Length: 129
Image (tube, rainbow, N blue to C red; front, side, top):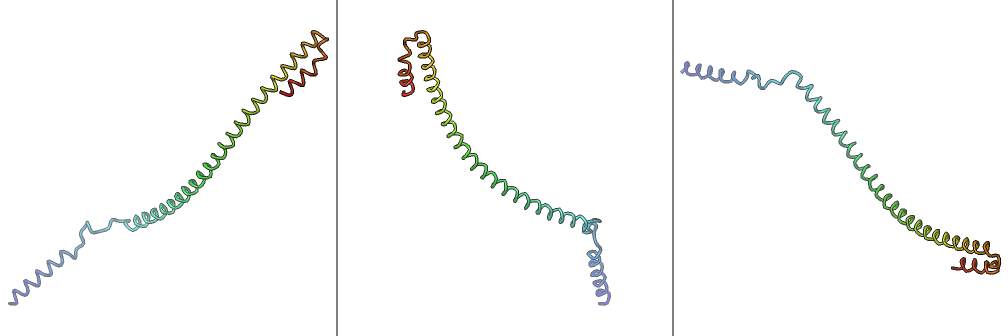
């Protein structure tokens, strides 16, 4: 009986020693703690960078909205200016036509001075049109 108990005890001790010895796979490589802290710090800095990036994107979206609103008002102003320019072009064309008519009547009076009595009437009609 003593032999069996000694054999069992020896077997138990030998089998437990197998798990007590660390295996090479379970040993952390040298510098593992340093790598862990560097990785953790990188993640923290990346998180900070991502927050800055998110804030920048929000600012850009706000700026984009402001620019779109400004662009809309600029287009409206541009359209009204185009309309004004078209009106002025038409008015300028009318004034130019009236001046050419008055020049033609002046030429008539210079060629024939007897027509000078009609000149003021002609000019009034041109200006009334």
